[in-house]
Length: 309
Ligand SMILES: [Zn+2]
Image (tube, rainbow, N blue to C red):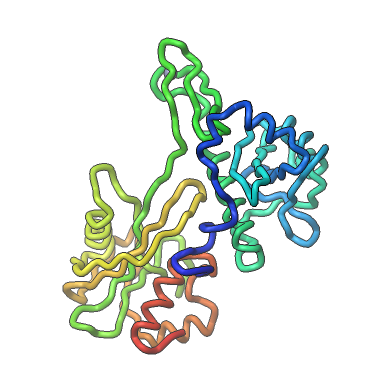
């Protein structure tokens, strides 16, 4: 879902992240107590939603109650001068989290794709990614002592005085690649991953490894997964994918040959698709998740062939 020029689902949005305020504990305390302040509660990585499937936003007494009850809170930023905090209620039971917030259910934000206001989806995904990181970083990786949150929930610090190591939210970049056929042939390479249902194909993707550039990762992943060498890498955009910590970086690349060899483990099958075949898949609603950059890669490639979906 491309929601604006260069902005995909879970990016963009209305929040000024106001990073300069994070270390100002007095100002943050005042904002937490401000009756205009909005709180987005989450439970177990899920949005807490109303009967209309709109995420709950709390203000006033309800907001204060939830901030106090939360295991972790994060300062997400400012919306037109109004502070927005996230509150993680995961330590409570689902029933208690619903009762505390007046929500009727807890729903994965990706299940609301296409229905939720894009800015709201971005804020929910942002909060979700931070809370996931908080739960994974409760202990110091150097000395094993507990860590505590600081700077509005954007840093954790080791509590051992002789250590004091700082930890920052982690992002795990991955490349996602539309490989087109050599010599200008209008075909692109899609693969069926292990565990995917029959007839379910997507573009190739993989995590960037330590010591690799994004371009190195593209060349390695494509060679490993389908045995194809690629050239002419073109950046297509990036998408926040905090499920739990991803950043998807999209490329188009051109294969040097059409021969394909899959490993049979990670990938079960890979084959070349024509624009007609992709348009048939689009018509059948099988051109990837509505909220994914994968779908954008396919859609923009189809448009470039002169035969948009
Ligand atoms: Zn430590």
